[in-house]
Length: 410
Image (cartoon, rainbow, N blue to C red; front, top):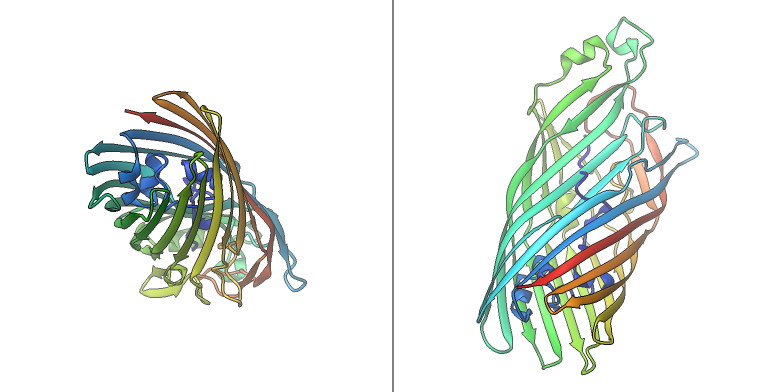
């Protein structure tokens, strides 16, 4: 019915805000910087740039705020009732001469929101979520003083879930009549294989260039359907668990980063990326021999850019700031109500303090402001009665992220 999980938040996009040191720079230089163990999630080759074996642990709070405004033809209003989502992560890297070994457990893409059951679009969606978790061992090898290559494989867990209201109108099912709407919940999980390839090139002693490719990940999720307060006739018509399958591909991604560190320790970084959202737009729901597209109008590939600065203040403190832009993956015709995505601008800042030679702590924050997301919902994945067309806009969308992290040098 919809695809979207609670381990992640945001308007369906990558989470460069992972609590790592580049978060305070809005993800700038993710592919080219080796500032902590979290760098392996963006580019496994970056592990070779770390000065020592390191463990990075972080926890991030994410809050999504939006307002849905229906059109004159379909008046509706909704806000996000879901509270703050907590996203943890941990990365570890062991340096062994020219070889580096790493392991990351983290989430990098997702959406989660809850519009509640008191708005006129509740029969389309009340809650939607897609969570991901990667368990990713990684390896890098220093080919020369200038060039390092890296690769990782990942066991990826995807957990889609949804909730919507269902009409209990007697004109479809017969008596008893006058029943209030029931609810239908869909959930499932899927493990699939993914991976990355990366390169880190030291053009000069001060300049590093990084390039990384994130492989696409194919998921086929057998959904469990649970009804609550459904009309007796409809409750007997629910398919058995696993009869409905959600099939989708999490997009591949290309990352390019350039970082320059001056003699006083100031780091200036920039990044470019491309994401294959058109493949995610081919998502299908399979039920009773029928295949229904989740995005009838598809999606468009997206690109982004960022720039950031990290500067030391004395021997113990580092401060950072950055700005990033993500293009709109939605087609001109609009998107379904369960995909409130549009272009984004992100502003970030952070501060880091060295507690001892072996411990650094960091606080970083990021605010993403999204453009208006046009919604045109005239078809529905599940063949349920009583669903009216919905058109309107997700407006005033902001994603707030705050992370606390610690780096332990081993």
